[in-house]
Image 1 (cartoon, helix red, strand yellow):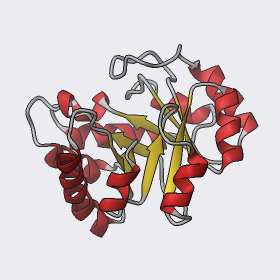
Image 2 (tube, one colour):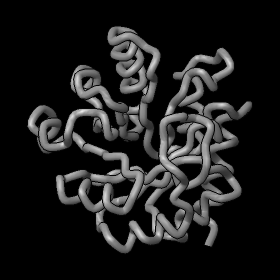
Image 3 (cartoon, helix red, strand yellow):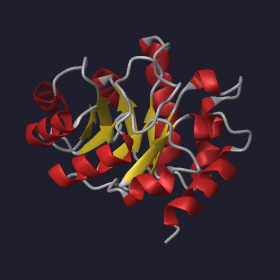
Length: 208
């Protein structure tokens, strides 16, 4: 299954300044977000499933894929289009047995070796992280930099999504160095106007 990963929104309610997450996602989608990952570490399972179902109801008619971070059970419960797994989550081979071939599985990679292994194991796309320094996660490796993006691109064929410290100023450079898309968190979720923030990112990403 092929998706448009060009502008990939990753949620984080603690950056929403009290605003409803669904509203932020709805505005961001109007602005051009092409894929949404629900990443909410603090929600209990029932809350997570309920929010996932609300987002699925919002995104489904727009044909925008919903990816669930970490939680295969939540992804199955809301019929999400995909699940994104990190280093401490279930191994992709075991996850594939649960979700089948129709659900996309993304894998986080912090090095070229991680990326090569993810492709070999059957990942549908790779989130390479962090490209730049970021404050939205505190358990990540040293930044790969643009040179790291280019190196990974030379080694794998499946789609690459850069994440970590990406904003309006540097997003185009990530694409120019080989990524198929960029994932952003604070650049949209924390923005006063998520729709405008998404529009500005799309404009930069499409710039020749």
